[in-house]
Length: 295
Image 1 (cartoon, rainbow, N blue to C red):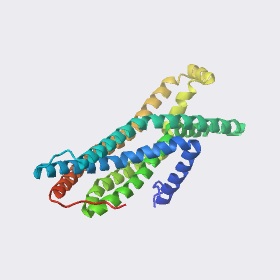
Image 2: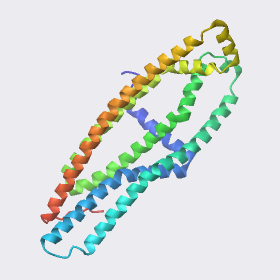
Image 3: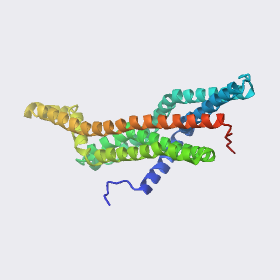
Image 4: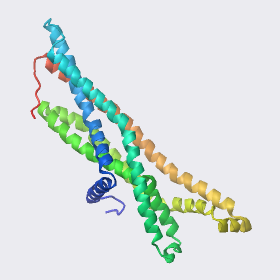
């Protein structure tokens, strides 16, 4: 098996480690981030069910020529308003919670990193590969570590949300469950492929980019600048940095374009399938087929 492939057990280990790290950094904001993401998964479905039930109830009352303002209508309106409000609130809170958690993450993790850096021996600093290693570590601390934790939070919330939705729709109609799972499964494989490709680019082809970045950083060193003036290799470093950066970013952009192109299609398919389910729920309710969900 290709060593670059991330095994399922490694994914589980990453989820467990990231979750523990998240709680150790800020139990409050990590928990709120998770709950917020869970709401984003579940609330659109509940909102759709409430909307379909409301519309069907209105049609039913009009059909039998009764007053459309009754306790059922008021309750369904209240539910739909509640789900819409919570969904909008969850999206508004997402950036705020991410920002607060990221501040705490940066403060605590960089403090540990600087403390560990101060304890290293001189022979470590003299290692020619040491600066490349530092760039990789700082890359993880600056954004990659946070991005991984965000992805783990989303993945865990999606799994729990999917479990709850499976329970709900299996009771209503198991065909709904199959229809809902189609875009979710496709999206899972798209994200898995994208994540694997980006990981491979960063892990196996990113060293040259990090060395170029290291060369750029070295231009701030007075001794390097002196040698640059004497030997005149400044233009070489600049051209190398431009060439390597362009090559590296082009590969990442290509993967991102492919992923988000497919994602747009999946989102459209997802909305189309949910609309068809809503329509079927309305038709069933009008036909007198009551829908119950036991708890």
